[in-house]
Image (cartoon, rainbow, N blue to C red; front, side):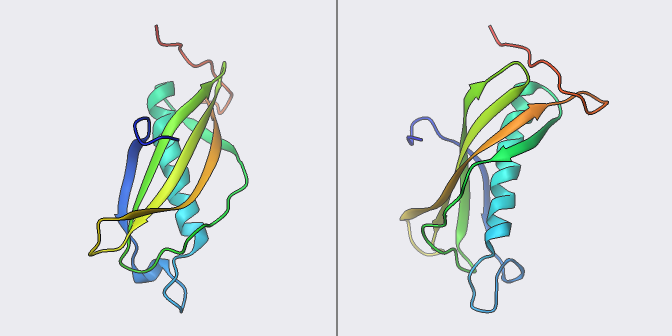
Length: 126
């Protein structure tokens, strides 16, 4: 994902409740932020409810510490009849610095669903 195409979807400060005893942020907390960010993109694009059905493998490149600003960026990669593939990156910035560092990335697959929980077609934008 290049900077010119990435869309900021979430920005938050990592807090003590999000960390282990060593001050490192839980991977599950970071993954949930990424899933929420992808979900925002999926819901907006599909004009309704969409659910996560898959996430590709994820590696943590750098740790996130208490007090770091975490930014989640995403972009829509592919749209099928009812599914969407969304690339997500998470970056951290130390509280008193400007440099951002990518900490992880993943690709999420969402499916648009109707009120009964069944897949529904995504209206193609013209």
